[in-house]
Amino acid sequence: MTTAIITGASRGLGRALTGGLARAGWNVVVDGRDGAALAAVGFGRGVTPVVGSVADPEHLVALVEAADRLGGADLLVNNAGILGPSPQPRIADYPIEAWREVYEINVHAPLALTQLTLPGLRKRGGAVLNVTSDAAIEAYAGWGGYGSAKAALEQASRILAAEEPDVRVWWADPGDLRTRMHQEAFPGEDISDRPEPESVVPSFLRLLAARPESGRVRVAQW
Image (cartoon, rainbow, N blue to C red; front, side, top):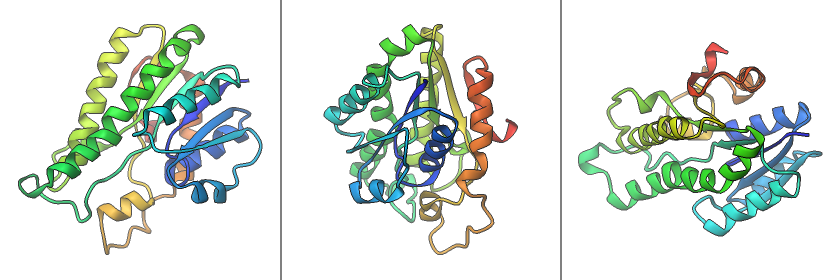
């Protein structure tokens, strides 16, 4: 049975992907900072929750160890992320400590977890899927922290793909979804016209089944 690690699974896209993979027969190791929120999801059979923050090195080790007990991770989904301050400030006014935190969660943590999983992924011909955004490639005013962090993650993904021929590396843009993070990006606005995260799960499953060459993926195209 295949095993995945999905970070940030207590809500949003991470929660939806976890449910989709579990229903498809995967073992899924998931995490979230809020233990009560993670427990409240009630994922059920095939899902192993590990409470903690991706900024904690010991927690990352615990995620990999949980996957190893299930035979080792075949897929790593770096989904956990933070937007930063809301409303989002212009770069000229962006608090540097908040900028550092955005990079810590959105860039450094995925890199650290990827490094821990790579030895097993190489052996099993596994895959890394880094969740990104169109803010990584478009210059949206007010998106300096999050957008530049996602751009850094995308470039790291490109280089990782060049360095790891035995591992598929995808950086996937799921599009605008009706999530709490998206609402934080547009405080006070009605985002009910955005699709629910569950709507893109079939596209992700098709991507995983097809296993295309490493590269940037627009989930809507699947």
